[in-house]
Amino acid sequence: MKDQPVQQNGGMTLLLWVLVLLLSVGGVHEYQRRQERAKQQHVEDLRRQAAEKVALDKLRLEREEQARKDAEERAQDALRRQRDMRMQELNRLLQPLTAATQRFNDAMQLAASTPRINLAGPVQQMQQIARETAAIKVDGCLELPYLQLLSGMEDAVQGFLAFMRNEPDLSRIQRAQEKIMQWQRVVELCKKAMQ
Image (cartoon, rainbow, N blue to C red; front, top):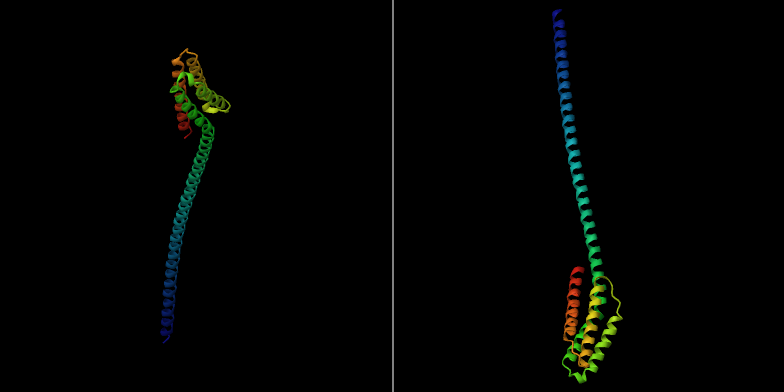
């Protein structure tokens, strides 16, 4: 009987040792599992941070691209406004000149079909239109062609005056028509350059 309590004590001790061993193995296993989960969590955190960084970089690039496009649009709008303003200014300058040129051409055609004895009225009208045209202030791309226009008008008037004195100089009238036509071509080129 004496052996029984020792055996029971030995069995209990063994059982305790087995239990301690199992708990130790379970603890180590639990520790390893926690370490593995911590590693996985760390990897997931790194992936999430990388994805967030990629998303933020993409958003930053999109914003920069949009800002660049907005700046380009503003610059193009400013250029369009400047071009429109120049075109309006050109049209403002051209309106009286175009009207005067048309009136002068009409007066010149009337003079060309009028007998010599009746030319005083049409030539006087041409002189009046030429003076009105000379009073218009012009600058920029129209300045030199404008001087050509005035020269053409003067040539036409002088050509018809010479014809009235019975000293015909048809080459002068032809030069006048060429200068006036050149004026009209240059105006169109100037308009195209503004666009």
